[in-house]
Length: 129
Image (cartoon, rainbow, N blue to C red; front, side, top):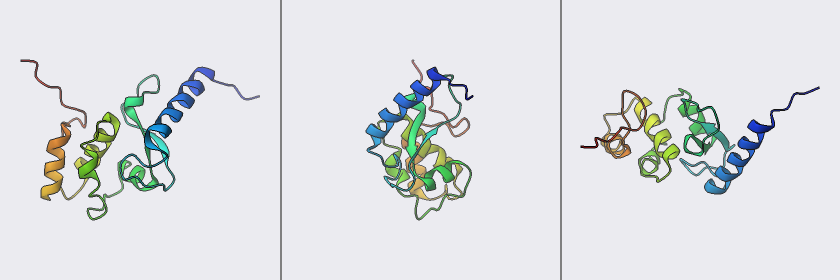
C-alpha cells in the first residue's frame, strides 16, 4: 500500500499548474519546449514556493546542475536577468555566475543588472539608509 502525502501533493499540484500557466508550457529562461519540468532553486523552503520554482527545459536544467554553459547558446540569459519573475532572474544570474566566460562584456552587464550577490548566489539586500 502506498502512503499518500496529500498536503504536499496538493501544494505541488497547484504550484505546477500556476507555473505552467505562467510559462505557457515553455522554459522560462530560453522559451524552449524541450522536456519542460519544474525546477526548484536552492535553498529549498519547507513548502513549495512560486518565487523559488520555475519551468525549465532539459538544457537549462543541466546548466544549473553544473554542466558547462555554452557561451554561444547562452545569450538568452542576458534577457532573462531582466525578468520580473524572481526565480527566472535568480536562475539566469546563477548560470552566469557559474560560467567560464565571465570576462565577456555581455555577461558582466547581465550580472550587474541581476542584483545577485556573486558570493551567495542570492539577491543582494538593498541598504535601507
